[in-house]
Figure 1: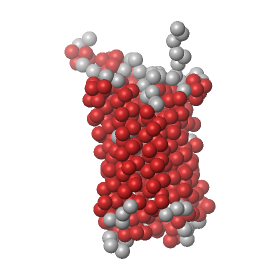
Figure 2: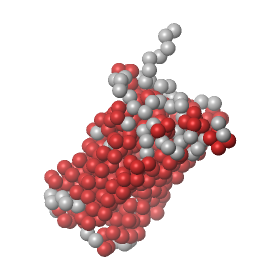
Figure 3: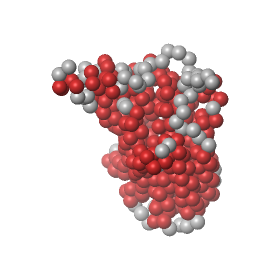
Figure 4: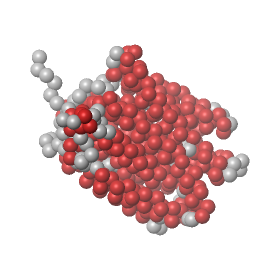
Length: 422
């Protein structure tokens, strides 16, 4: 072996770049409807409750298709699976601009969610196969940081687009982004790192202990469902998404309904992005603190519990503040802080899926995201029937339930194989 081949190549980091770009596109396609809400409601003659069901249709579909699309990635490999789901959701992003009434919009957004459901479980599967253990949590932190910031810039992006084109054309433009990504990803990516021509023998050796590319044996649902950790991971993510979906569904409407007499649409669009900017920093903080706290606690499980439990609790307390004041500066600081500390748990949650799910990390991550997005379905629908101030107090309580869940979660012990006999 010559000196050059003895040094591992760094081709594996390409999956982080592709994952980051896809996460940004996914969030742009997901969040753009919240900023276009007013134009859509005026065009289709919808009220607030009806719009809540349109928001909920996406989240329900996103939840229902998490496990099937995660399973597809585990069974057939993420290359073909990601190609299919990205092209699918890109088509229905563009098709959103063709909706003619409430029913057609609900159907289109439901089908759109079915495609987007495959994004993060399959990116988790890619990271599980392509990255070293120490790199996986950092990759998840970077991924979610960029995803949140992609969502943060979307309200402003849509507001600017709506100044020059109508909302129907804007959705067509956003739908084209995923098609471009899919073309370059399919040319570059291989399911197995050893099949990539730019990966040398030394880099292959670094990744040799990772789970195999695709699984054809049965998912051990009996072991997953018999474990307390599984149910608590599901519940905490339900709580997280129930609250978080407010930022990407009703927050622009809340700002427009209550403060449009004082601020213009571009200023309100910037404010709508504040929580997602905060969430991006929260993911970076979670990824930064995890290895450092792990050295202090001597336990990755304890580190993940401390960060997540504390983040959920602080987010819940922050959500009480908007129910007690009408000062927009204080409200946006509180919501930005809630998103920041809540998102500290994100690398912990997805890192737990990789460790607990093991060989079936795509399916297991899909199951957690499914339960989370059931919360994302319930949250916007319920919010459509209550006042904003009451909704803030409900969000606070739900966050606190998630905090309690983390006290009892074992986020590191694999469940994909039988425990050793004693």
